[in-house]
Each structure stands twice: as C-alpha cells, then as structure tokens.
Image (cartoon, rainbow, N blue to C red; front, side, top):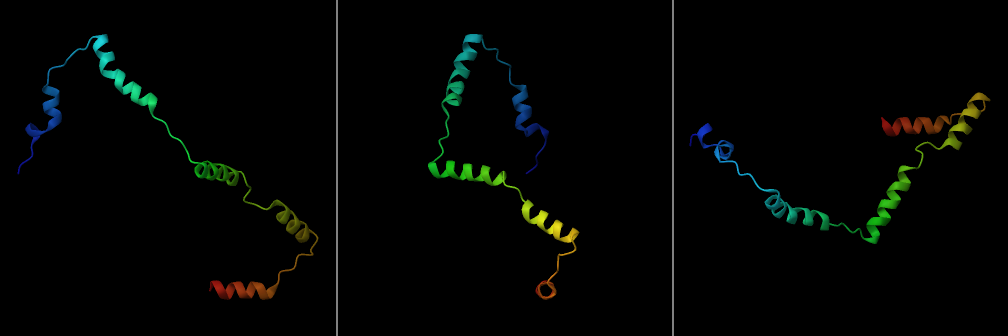
Length: 96
C-alpha cells in the first residue's frame, strides 16, 4: 500500500468549506461543553487527605539533624572527637 499526500486526512479537512456560526449558534454548540467542565469535581477520600497532609509535613522536615551536626562540630573543634577504628574497619569490609 502506497501512502502519499493525496490520501492524508488533514489535506481533506483543509479542503472542506468553512462554516461561520452566528453568536447564538456558537453559544448553542459551546454551552454543553462549558457546563460539563463546570460540573466536573474531584472528591478525595479521608485516607487520601491524610496522605496529602502527611506528605506536606514530610516535605517541611529538615534532611539534616542540626543538633547532631553541631555536637560533632564542637567535638572536632575541641579535639575530643574520636573515630571508632573497629566500626570504620567493619564498614570498609561490608562495602568492599
């Protein structure tokens, strides 16, 4: 089957005569569409509203635990922070 420009639908649509509608006819055509758009509604269930609320709360939580960071910074500055060598070695072996 050969497909060429003469069989394309947009070309056939473009060849159709243009129809002008009066304002009254235009309202008659578009009014049902406008009514259906105005009537559309979405109602969330209680669970969905709860999930939405929890998601908003999680979005507001800091990713960094400021108190812990501050504590570690103070220990490093005071030269009192000690790295547990055993834990470091264990992590290296687990990741290796």
